[in-house]
Image (cartoon, rainbow, N blue to C red; front, side, top):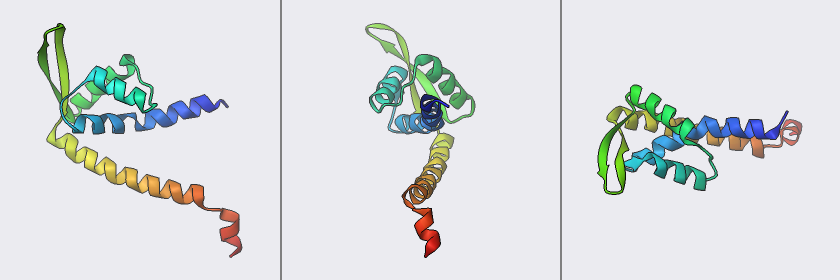
Length: 116
């Protein structure tokens, strides 16, 4: 088993959550999302991001509008819908619960706990 495979799966598992958070701060262009994710060491390429954004839009969680660009073609800027905001709030609760549970597990020495 290769560690890289597990690491990739862990990153994929939180990608949608991170993207929704980025979009929740206001209108955002896809390349800006990629830049922020990459700088946070969550590697993502356009071939992964655009299908995910399409899926989020079809689910009613995000919307977009076109903005004319002075230096090229128009750009799609994404925003969260009201449903997307509610969805993200629920994900925040789930995330906090998972972080708490995971921290309890990884900081707990089971053997010492069992002997007490």
